[in-house]
Image 1: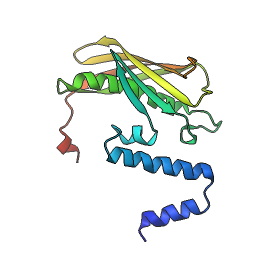
Image 2: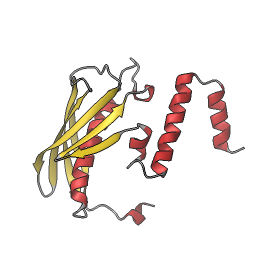
Image 3: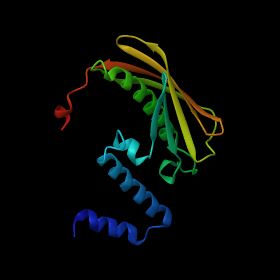
Image 4: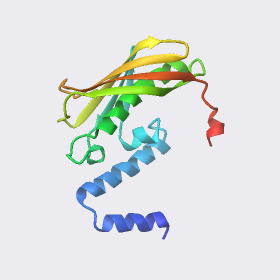
Length: 167
C-alpha cells in the first residue's frame, strides 16, 4: 500500500461526514486541474468559477467548511484570495495577447459585513491601465447583493517565464 493510500485510510477511518466531503472535494479539485477544467490548483480545490463580461472578471466561490475561520464563517484570507484572484485573472487575460502578465504588488481590502450565504461573488474592474502598473478594484458580494468586502490591487506588468522554464 502506498503512503498516500495509507494516509487516506487513516484519515477516513475516524472522519466525520464533513471531513469526508472536504477530502472528496479536494481530490475532485485536483482531478479537475489535471483535466484542465480549472486554471490553477487554488481555483480547483476551492471550486472557484471564473467568467468574463466586457471589462469585468467575475469569480464565484462556494462557501464550504474549507473556507471557514474559527467562527464558521468565511475566513478573511479566503475572501482576500478571492478578490486577488478576480483582479489577477482580469489583468492577465488582457495582457496574455501581448505576451505579458502581471503580479500583485499591493492589495488593500475592507471587510464590511460577515457573509451569511453559501456563495461569494467577486467582481473586478479596472481603475487605471498603465504600461508598467495596473490598478483594479473588486467588490465581493453575496447572491442577494449584500456587499461583503471592497478591495483595490496594484499589479506590475511582467514578461512571464516560458512554461518549460517552470517545470
